[in-house]
Length: 209
Length: 209
Image (cartoon, chains in turn green, blue):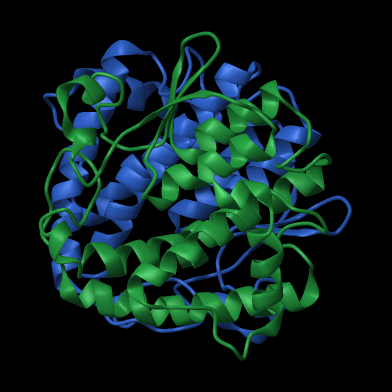
């Protein structure tokens, strides 16, 4: 297997944590988004959509998208399960992962991509350039506040997001919450359940990679 | 089991097609978004995020989000497989489903939600209102054109999107492509592979529901 990573970006970090939680060591190539390496012809030959992470599987198939990589790894290396064992559990993990991507991941990315001068014309990942939309950044910031409310509501009821144990949904939420520092948003001090959850996950070896 | 559907919206249609492709008959309640029924207290007690579809599982768990519902149903009713059999296949289905959601589903929804007078202040689903952003609709339209290019490129190589057989990724793409009629976008006549794929899926009984 071969893993294309980027040490500075949140989406590759999600796959990196997933791989580490499975106890796997996979040969890794770092692609620098700061140097626009994802747009070079040699990388576009691997992933024409110019996104990272990418996993080349044991059979040589090329998988992009965190869910594509996670589905493959969970099926190939079932232990420890990170996407649920029973049908109800699998449903809950996929549900919470989707909620976190939509309510947390997208708004945080929208704020960054539509405000950062270094991302001018890079408001959407991929080969095509798109201009920044300031109103989208403003809306994103309001949605990030709602996301913190949503997390606190859930984590007041449950030790982890999807199940009573650590799963893919916690990886996704942890990476996005940590990444929100780039838009100067932190877990509010009034949200004790989220603060405790974040510290617990931060102490896992996979979070230090 | 109990399924909360909405006959006019694309996301519930994805779950409805998945259920039909599994050969299941599930008691269904229709929630009218046109009448804002998803914001009524009795529905918010079921899904406080005010989204449809929702599936109440055999054990009584409440699942929202298409991927949550699909993961549960695939695990409970494995035949016919709609999310891949082997690890490589599972990865490819999850990957293509994610690509279609991001590159097709979101842009189409952005155009509709940021232009339709009936969706004023409803630019994002959920309990909180958000104003329309006209620039986002404009960007969405440009992205829909790229999405049609992406589909044609893939379907020129492969009979179905993820595998050589029908999967969840085809359901997602078919529903969004069909829904694009509301923003007056159709598969370009210059895209024969996509046109053939669309007609093939349209002829499935699950597409008529």
